[in-house]
Image (cartoon, rainbow, N blue to C red):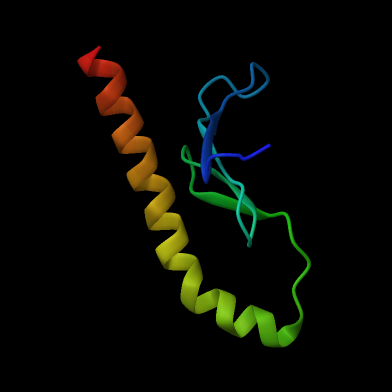
Length: 76
């Protein structure tokens, strides 16, 4: 099965949170309520250096995805 790069998620235990799930490597979940990121990968020290440079771009892409989805929802 091919998954989209980003998915929206919610949970009634966290009623004000909106989660974006990044399904490609490096996989992560970001809580847009507080911008907390949970990485779903184990990284070596060398990987962490590279990840720190890419993390900002990935988080911005997640936010852009959310904005696009909300705009599409509002248009329909």
